[in-house]
Amino acid sequence: MREFPYSSTLSRVEYKLTKAGIELYPMFMSMMQFGDRWLETSKSGPLQLIHESCNCVSKPIVTCSCCEQRFSARDVSYVDGPGAGRIPAEAPRRSRRTADDFMRGRPSSVSRTLEVIGDRWSFLILREAFYGHTRFDQVHSELGIATNILTDRLARLVDHGVFRKEMYQDAPERYEYLLTPMGADLHGPLLMIMAWGDRWRSQGRPPMLLRHDACEKIFTPVVVCNRCGEAISAFSMKYRMRYNPEKFGGRKSSRAVPGRI
Image (spheres, helix red, strand yellow):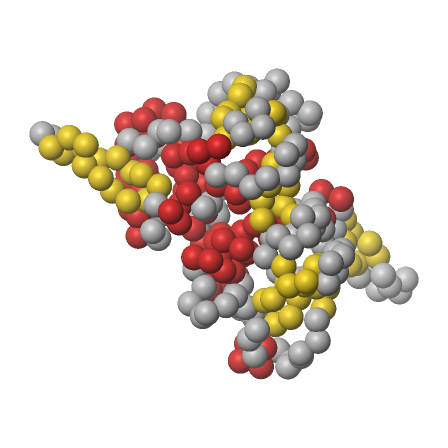
């Protein structure tokens, strides 16, 4: 964000999204769809999205930038990029927050998703699972994480339904942590986070490239409308609320408004 003064007499500023901030929108849309599918307790998510370009109710999906097809984690290979190399993981400085901390005022599928992957260690552990590192010792070796923290985060991810714990050795007992269908569905949101970081935080040297095995090309994940296939943006989406904002301290409204998440 950038600060812009809006009062000539008082020291007051408003905060507007930069281009980098605006380009976070597709990433949040992928997290919203995950939250609606797996974490929403009602039959439908709190918001209904309308894509203005095709004027259809939209459920955005993640696709390959080259062949424009959907993909799963099994369809993607990882190739070292120009910025490849190991950087020691630093301990996070902030404590975890729950979804309730982010849902004051309105329900949010994005917040529910962030409760699962918003903690840095949980995010990195999940990333390792997509690389095929599913055993405690493997993850510990790759991340250099303290064993007590790793134990805690793995237990939380199992409780959330992201991993299932399966014994692979009984003397002594050893377990691996395998992705559930819910966990595998986080692949799209994680790749969107990665793509944003590569574009805005890697100084043009992404550490890893993605290869879509189906079309055999290096690609970038793109969030598109599931109805017309057009890439979405914050300026092309509207939403309708499916909840009563009065229950959350807001005012009742039935009109469609620009794409808030």
